[in-house]
Length: 317
Ligand code: COA
Ligand code: ZN
Image 1 (cartoon, protein in one colour):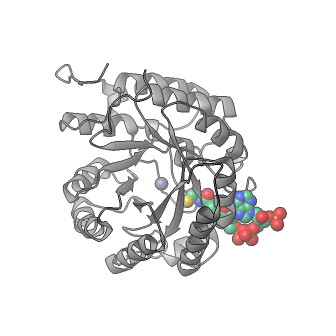
Image 2 (cartoon, rainbow, N blue to C red):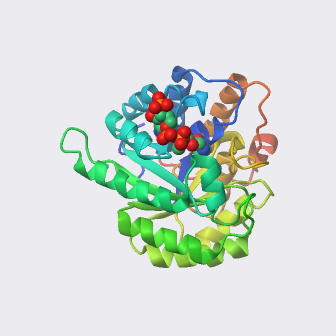
Image 3 (tube, helix red, strand yellow):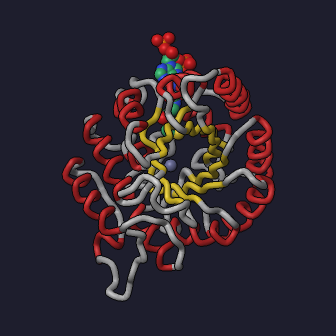
């Protein structure tokens, strides 16, 4: 496959299985396995992958090799590698490696933020400003990293319950003013429904203007793909998903996996939307992953039932 392949797809499906998916599993994958997963996703047409998380290894041992995974990932042709960071220290580690994109995350729910990153949401906002300053102060050498900001628990919280729209919108506005290159709105605990998604995401997209907006859904209560359609209606053009539906949040009780990558691509392509992603190649990688992670729960309708005979995907050669 050529690096310059498909021009920008109409909708970007961003793999987060290597981060959101792996933070909950019992088996620690080797750095080599993680990089093979990245390479095969790129071969399948996935260009955006959150490859690791720069958190203390004590907190998530799966990411003790974050530096090596990020170093390997940035060498993979055609891959736009992102890494999640919870604080300035994580961002500095990611910038040092030269990862193309850093995803900073904070929670709209103060209680969730406290549990997840041990500080208030307001303190996390202040930390973001320091991250922007650190990124901007770095001169030549590595190209300037893109800096995305994610608002977690944007549709409700297992600890605090309801999260007001105005809180999410105010955070989006503040993060963009502070210098975010992109906004991700996340249903960390799987509370969102399509009406709520349409209503909030219309306002977020209007507020964001030229700044791209992505959504991150979990399928905890079965509405993940319905929420994708609602977000599409509202103007969102990028979605996080994980191969085999792996995932969860260690700090949100009963949160289950992300929306499933194979099923998400199937939905989008069935809607006539170009993703540039080959579902058969995803399914082959899923089989490899299932063999690497014995005893883990995988989800997915397409893996179970196969593609319909009537489904024809138009992929660029
Ligand atoms: N990477 C590596 N080490 C880090 C780090 C990072 N991103 N952030 C902090 N540390 C180190 C500090 O240097 C310090 O080390 P020391 O004890 O050797 O001096 C130690 O960890 C404690 O630092 P502190 O700033 O007090 O962190 P904390 O204990 O308050 O924890 C977080 C804050 C953000 C690091 C932690 O809560 C965290 O990693 N949360 C993310 C959880 C997660 O992955 N959630 C799911 C995804 S959203
Ligand atoms: Zn998630």
